[in-house]
Image (cartoon, rainbow, N blue to C red):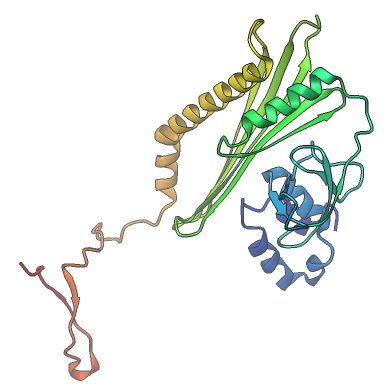
Length: 283
């Protein structure tokens, strides 16, 4: 099913809507149910989906942040958010962790890099998002993710931020680069999807400050600026655009009066007809 129309639709599913999309596609293409693992994997990585599992009551919960940085050689193998465990994923409308095992790091890791990775993970943990920190290819990879589904509010969204921390060319500091992608989906009276992306310019840690604290400051400063920029974009551009996509008023230009205090349904079912009368609220 690679590169098929079905796989393209699955990979581009709105945040949090994968089960619904798979259900709709299986009606017209039964093969989707058994031949869509690669597309589901692409969807999970593009939205930074988080899976949790506890194999033993006495063991802490294992958390996996689905992204390319956490993926290992096996197509179904991912590291947990700490990089110390390796998990096998079972694919489906709701992917899950099939098994968990301890991971042995097969590359030589610099002690300073390991210390910085551990300190960075502790600093980002509890910041309101799921964060993962891994050491790969001589660099520290940080991913921060959040996936929200609000069915009652008629919207969903995903936040996926990716950063790379490397030693600077002079060897005296660390450089931080990264990017942010935000996807939103609104379906009140319409079907509006948007993608917001920003790339962070290369930053160098300041000498004299703890490196982990400086990395966290650089990352949060970039994300806060992106958040403020996005708020401004919504205020100036998105609201008029979304308003244009909403249902138009009736031809007479009058809005329906939804004031429940003024609308009462007559219980006098004369001639089996319900009459809508305009009544003022009781004082």
